[in-house]
Length: 147
Image (cartoon, rainbow, N blue to C red; front, side):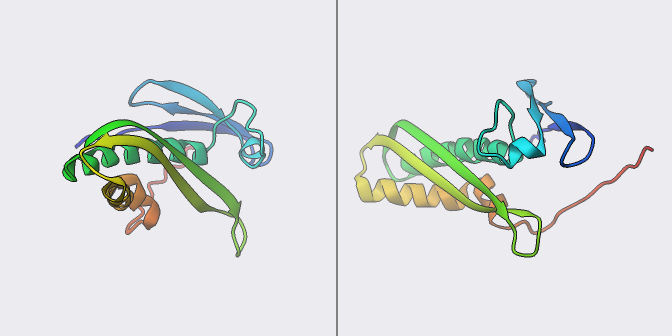
C-alpha cells in the first residue's frame, strides 16, 4: 500500500512564526500555516492541521460509506460529507482536538433509512482516519537536528 507525504517548512516561534505545508505526494498545492490564524475564528486564507484532518476524515469517510452502503445491498447516490474538527485548550495546558463532527447528507436506492444509518455507523467505525483519530497505538518519532 502507498505512503503519502506532506512537508512543512516553518520559520520562527510559535506565536510569531509561520510556514507552508506542501502536499508533496499529490503536488496538489502548498498552503500557508500560522498558529495565530490557526487559533483564530477567521482563518484568513490560511489552513491548519485541523482543517487538513477534516479534509482527510471527510474524504475517507465518504469512501468507506459508499462501500458500506453497497455492502448493505444499496446503491449509493449523491453523498455530501463534512467534518468539523474543533481545537480547544487542553486541561493540563496546550491544546487538543476536542471534537470531530461528521455530517452526512445523501441518498441510496435499495436500502431504507435504518440501513443507511447503519452503513454510516459502520463507515465511522471502519474508516482508517476514524481509527487513527480514535487512538494511536504507536507513535514513531524521527528527529534530525541540523543546526
